[in-house]
Image 1 (cartoon, one colour):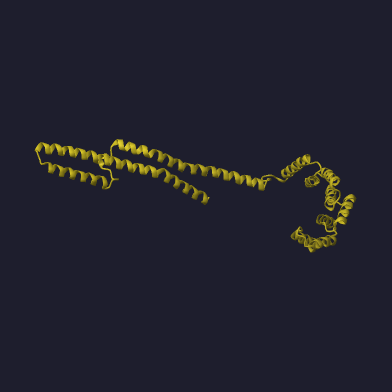
Image 2: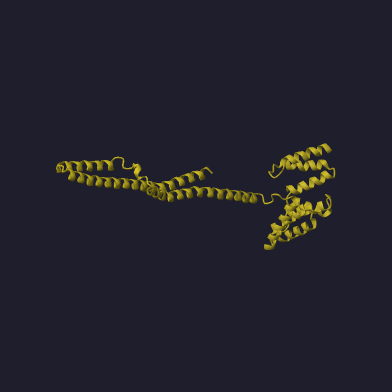
Length: 290
């Protein structure tokens, strides 16, 4: 903002210099010309009066020449002495109108030069607010939404992505996770099965399918869920989500030590993806329950 106003001040200064300097010069020149013309007219009148007086009185021609010389010297003195100062007799209405006309254009352009920055600042403020709002929208596209609205929007966007690329295994997997979080277990299993057909089995996918059956059964480990979970741990013995699901099942079935052993192994792994605070709280809770 400081840079903006510095630029405005510089622009106004340049405009005023360009607009007013010629106008002031023209004004000074006009006043000087008027003074010179007035002095010349007075000089001529004085010469005519001197000729008339001397011819009438019969004065000597030498005195007449000396008087004309004095009048000429006086003219030069009037022209060169403070030429920019106009006498009061020159401040007539015609001169005032001329000056006013000469100042009208510079004054108008000065007003425009002052109004343009104000208009620009107004537009800049509106643009800043709009840009800030747009940036906030990009940073948080779910602002003002509750959990259900967020889930619905994410599912809709994933469905559109799948329509454009039906063999996008990652999109199918994320869609299954969204359905799982929304407790739409049957839809989640359909999405995970589609993912398996596209990219095959892996620990992440098998754990997701096991979790879907586990929560669909009211947090009970069904035979098929246990098979999928064991297969996931066979592929990746340190898979965090699979171990957390197994430890949770141990805890809910009062198998506290088995849960503590799994959580402790996750702590000892120093994996940055592990929430150490939550694990320590879970371990302490399990020890209290023993």
